[in-house]
Image (cartoon, rainbow, N blue to C red):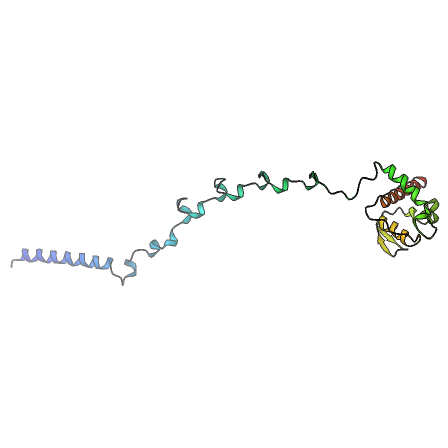
Length: 203
C-alpha cells in the first residue's frame, strides 16, 4: 500500500476514535462533570412566584374573589331577617307588673304621706311618723342613697326592703308586695320627705 493511502486511512480512523471518545465522555455516568446540571432538574428551583396565577394557588387573593363566592363579603347586618334588627323593647305585646296605679309622682306622694301616719298598717299601735317625725332617725344628713348599709337591719338593703323591714318589725304588720302600689307610694313619699329635708338644710 502506498504512503498517501496509508496516511488517509490513519487520519480517518483517528477522527472516528476522537468522536467516539467525545460522545462517550458526554454520556459517561462516571464523570460527574459531564452530567447535566442536576439543579436544573430540581422542581424546587422553579420560582413559584413566577408561576401563572391560574397555576399558582398562592396567586389567588381571597379578597379579590367575587362576592357570591366570598363568604366574608356577606354583611349579617344587611340581612332582611337580621335578628339584631329586632328590638325586644319595641315589642307590641308587653306583660305589665300590675294595673296602672298612678298618673303622676305627686299622686303617689299623696298616698304615701297618708300611709306614713297610718297606725292601722300594723298591730303595734305605731306608724312610720312615730319614729320619723320631723325627719328623725333617717340619717338624711348623710345624704345616702339606697341601697346602703343600715345598722338596725345589719345588712345592705334597698329602700323597698327597708320599708318592709319596718312594717314587719317596729309596726308588727305585713310586708307590702313587691309590685304593689302601697310600696310604691311609701317609697315615693320617702323620696319627697328626703328632698324636703335636704332643701331645708342646704348649706
